[in-house]
Image 1 (cartoon, rainbow, N blue to C red):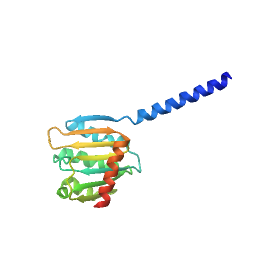
Image 2: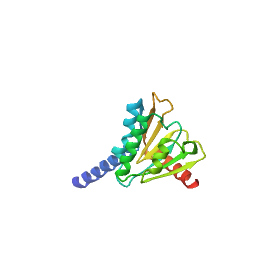
Image 3: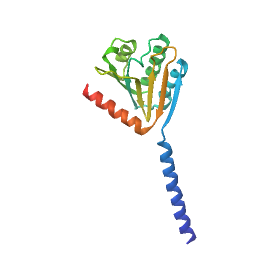
Image 4: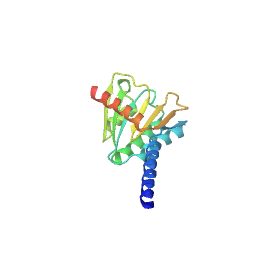
Length: 168
């Protein structure tokens, strides 16, 4: 009887641990990065977390589109490395960005699909795994990014992206 009671108690503990683990993993976590080096570092996060076969969905915007040469080179290098690692990119840009340096780069990047839309995209947003990455580069001296880990928030944005992709 003691063995049976012990087994029941162990099962309860295992179930409680699973619930705790699941609720812990669904906790939303965000980090804010300010300044050029911090933002480039935060952009590199997708290199550490993405795996071959993953797809990164990106909303490109005027406010998330840097004009500084060093920023553009850093973004190009990160995305070139992602593609080399077998990670696909799909990007939605506003029509106003058609002639931007980054749009021209993405158009030639293998493993990258690009669509242009009429609607204004308010911020640069990248969706990968359970992460939502938001980039605001409207102040060249002090760009800001926010990295949020949340499966539910990420899924909402991914559904929105897919809807925009299909409509355009």
